[in-house]
Each structure stands twice: as structure tokens, then as C-alpha cells.
Length: 243
Image (cartoon, rainbow, N blue to C red):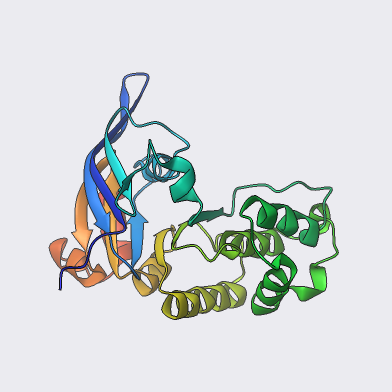
């Protein structure tokens, strides 16, 4: 039985002031898959994510999500998609619960308080629900952002450096929880990180970008074999240093 991709990217290009930030890339993401997006700074990862979220308009190429053209079906598609990043701020004057209730209303979530409380418990931060965001640590804010991204039970989750601000123990718990949610709900995740061990452990497949182009795509072991290295970190260093 042929499995249809949830995300189809064809010949996607984005040019800023004459510079190709993303250069004619094509790939697919399948149901229940964790797809890693890897590359040095300036490789085009963030620009690719922004185009997949309809925050940036491609110069050329096409994006289909759920079989629909993203440009003409933006609102319908994004209702079943969500995003988290360690670098996105929330309103500092609102409490954690107030922030999450605002996002829940945006997605028209039924019984939002129960959903929020469950996720707060899952991420082990129930004790901060009535704290203003300004009083949280960076790691606590990161977990609140992850909860925000899971509120609408998304079919596709875009995660940009989701554990960057977490200590090793909490980061491990977050990764385990994300994998558990993926297995239970069958969501697909596009994942970026500069933690090579994390990428290797989390990703079913990896897309390796460099200077806006895809230079490798496949399972972690396939990429290691292609570059004749024993780890993704050594592959990353070889590409970044062009050795």
C-alpha cells in the first residue's frame, strides 16, 4: 500500500537580496515520521521552516501539506499544524495559564483547561501555572512553548531547537515525552537541533542542508556511511569545515 506524504516540497527556492537562502530543494515527510533538518548556521533551515509555516513566501517552488497547496489553503492547513522554538517569546506579563488559554482559544480547543493541565503535568511544570512568564527560567519557558505547540493535537509539529535551553535531564525527559506522544497520536515532526546525538536518536530520516542546498538525505546511518564517518557530529564537522 502506497503511503501518501503529509508534506511535499518541490523545487523550493527563497532569494533575499540576490542571495539564495534556500536553493531548489525537494523533499517529502510521511505520517508518523520524525524528519531531522540539519546543517550549519546559514544553511537555510530557519528559512525552510518559515516557508513551511507560511511566514515567508517562496521565491519559487511549491509546498503541499495534507495534499493541499499551502499558499491557497493556509488557514485550513495551519489549524492542524503547530510550532515551537526556544527563541520565540511569550507575553511576559501574563501567567503561564493565561498564555496557554489564549493560544487554546486561537485553535478553538474544547475544554482547554483540562488539556493544559494534562500537558503541564506531563512536562512536570504544574507548579508554575500561576507564575508570570517574566519570572520563569529559560528552561521553563521552553517547556511552556512545547505545551503551546501540543495544545491542538497537531498532525504535524515543527520544532526548532526545542531542547536548546534545557538541562540534560529535562532535555532527555522532553525527548522521551515527544517520542511517546508521536507513537500514541501518530503525529509527524520536523525537527532541527545542533545537538548531533539528539538528532541521531530522534530522527527517522535526516535532511542535511548546506548553503541552501540538500547535500544528503536518508536515515542517520545512511548519511554516516555516505560521508564515511562514525557519527553525525563528525559528518557535521566535515561539512562545516569542508575537510
